[in-house]
Length: 238
Length: 184
Image (cartoon, rainbow over all chains, first blue to last red):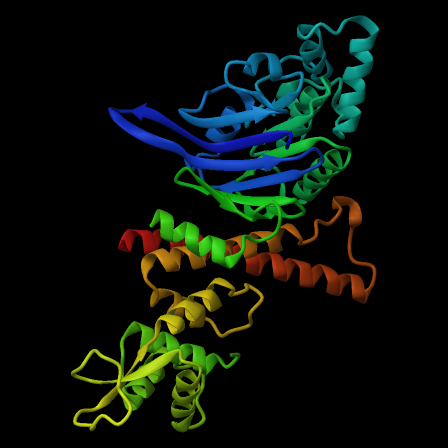
């Protein structure tokens, strides 16, 4: 059993009187220690995918299971403690210190006093953001905000880390450093699922996927699908 | 079967049955600048090889039935693909690797001649292979600085060239998929 399993997941949304397909029949498995990149353009369904995995939204069809449990309906309980979600734009209070933002995540989840301070600083250090602890969020650049978002999620010791476009707006010379950070987190056993708008974000990942018009496709987990199977599946669907 | 000429001729026969000279003309038009022929007889050689492998068969131009041995020849002979030929051609294209160093346009030309469901399967498989390859391209340390030796420079240049080429192929695969689906 994989840590995260998506089985034939579909999601629709009503938009301006139209029933828009956001995600169609998506299946995916992620094990601990895997770094998975999903490349797609804006509107392709990549954020929908992450929101379903996080349990923020429920699928219309199919199942999303985290460690064997259905995520839909239990998202709030699983999210934060076991699934860390780094949003596209870090939503912290602009005037707040970076360390306080991480502390807040711990306090909300019942971690108090000295332990909270220790864990907050450890998470910032692990995300390569130790020097940012006394900086205000409004002063941080894109790279630093991503690192703070990762620290915010890491503080609670998630088993799965979700990142929505962590490389967006990050200077080119900082992108590889961020990818290496995510790779090292995966190598320590955290499962990492991220969306990217630039194909360079797929380098070094264990599974590389693309998403377009709500359809997820890409390099299968256990080697390329046998040609005969692929032909038969296409014949069945076509 | 390794010859790109043989596969190209098979693709042309699948697209539309034709006689030898017709195949030569269509080959010349479709693969000009991509696969060069030294002589016209290479097409005849390809036809012979395909026939021997039962990938194509003869029939009379005005008769859809395969040519029977001993039957009097009253009309021109054309070649048509067999079921095996169609199946082998599909399997060959499904196994097409992004590492292939074919001239630009050869794979696209062959893809465009397939029925839409097969073309979509081929492009999906091609994209899968590209994505697997791109995952394996290296990520340099941001603090690595300038290359310190010729081998290191070589390694970085090769990795970047490989990444950029694969990125372009993945985007092309997405474009191809959309175009094929629009045609359905």
